[in-house]
Length: 284
Image (cartoon, rainbow, N blue to C red; front, side, top):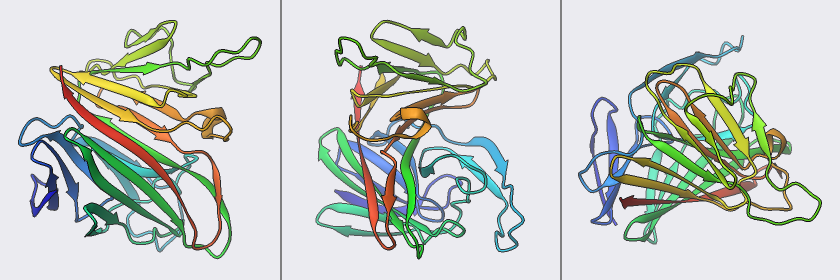
């Protein structure tokens, strides 16, 4: 693993890590944010420069920054979505260290929620990385939440998501959750027997979001000659957010987000939960 620290565009100080084939760029002046994932010195498959902000709904005077900025890339949230809890700005510097060829990115304990986030990153093959999202409870009491790993993809690509292949005689196995603003006749969305696709279209502003029990634990996104693959584990015996969603996907005219979620878990004070994703980049 090669690591260098330098400025990246307008994002300030970042670290560049690579294995001589694939590369990540991670912000240091704010985050936790992975800004880029690419073949070495080639085009970023992740979305950047996203001009979307959201004001925090809070009267807390200690919340100095009252605006959350989407920015782009990969971010680390916790579910369920709620303002201001989910949208506490990740605008403070992060720390990093390296141990046994694992890069560890650590955020200060988050104000308001008293949760601390870490991501451990390691190369597991020539074209794959493992991201271990770790959420630590710094409260004095037990909490219940789920890790939410959200990756913004570059524009004008198409996501492919399989439905469960599990067979049951009488019970349903393919669950779809539909958000109130979602139109299933949207031309960006294509529903098939064993999978669905969702494309990003810069000319369609209306948002679209659905969630599923992604028991196959995989989603892909293709754009031009690149394919991004995200893998994760779905636990059949666990409870997931949003009526059983281990995977959610969202798009509008600026972004397409590929989102995996951990099971909902109770975390005692000073204990932690984790959620692992595998990313792969291929040429097609």
